[in-house]
Image (cartoon, rainbow, N blue to C red; front, side, top):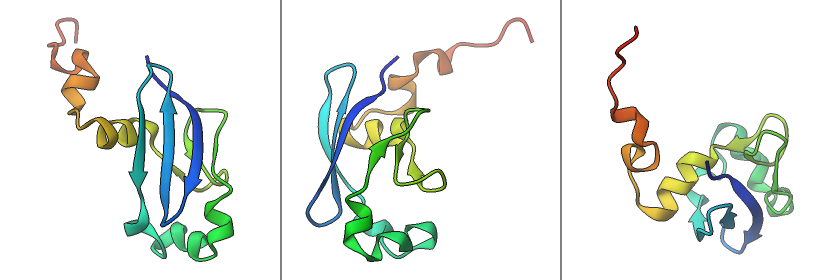
Length: 94
């Protein structure tokens, strides 16, 4: 399973993210600025405080984070079924 190993804030509310499987990419989150909990980013210095949380989320606090799987799919252009192939399997022991 892959997970983020490094994250850095870039200008214009973009993130540089590196994953454990070698994927490296940029994620534009500017469309979230000022919305709901992301109003925290109205002060750009708060956006720069991004880190990888203990549960491997891309976070700014215990209450503000972005799903690392969703970020991975956005960066790679992969679908959930490509990233998580077991989603296609039928449950036979339900």
